[in-house]
Image (cartoon, rainbow, N blue to C red; front, side, top):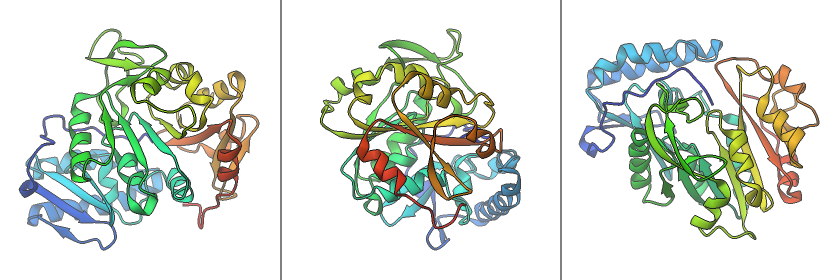
Length: 331
């Protein structure tokens, strides 16, 4: 998912619990916050609701204006009774979680809830702060194993914190994903949009692992069942090219289609170059619909600053599970 936001990189992800503000999405209860922080939270909640009419354009700008009130503190959101997710206070991307009406990647949440009973491992590439690894490893989602992979040192510090506050129940790997093993340079000004795609040799040097190499490194069985989430900011195609063995397992891939890509590059590549079947959540039918061609995405992708997910699989098991899902409401 792509929204306009920037991580205040100077903030310390390892601060103690005494500097942490907590927010419970089930009740809306706030603790550990003073008057200034409560005012900021109320402002962010109002900003999220107002900006939702424009796919949250401008929300991050408001968060930046409020950041002086944060004093470098962390915000910890209780996502469910077994999932805690931490990020810098007034973060322009994740602070949308303060709005109880907001649901992060609702289509993928529908998918993960619908497969809670399945036996699989999540391979969370481009994990950022570890939202999906935190959620999928929680009891309401089936307590699944997860490998959270993130190249950015700043992001990895927050990711590590989130692993710790959730009892280190998912595995961490600091690396980028690419077609082959090696090193690359990571660039970008937004923590949710760091990429090795166009660094031109500038930025943080990071290791790169191919998905097939990851199978060996993490001892992933060819007989295993996997959900591969690729949120790797422009490197999805090379990542798929480096994962031929993994894609032959009982695997389903979640790829982000960027709203500002009218050619639907990732989906077009999958349809033209792989044997994977492609599915996308359609708000009109409230289901994941099979895409035989990319033209349907012209209607589904409505916002340039938003991300839209597609599911791709050659597995009869995963195809059946995807086709059986239906949302209670489209939003």
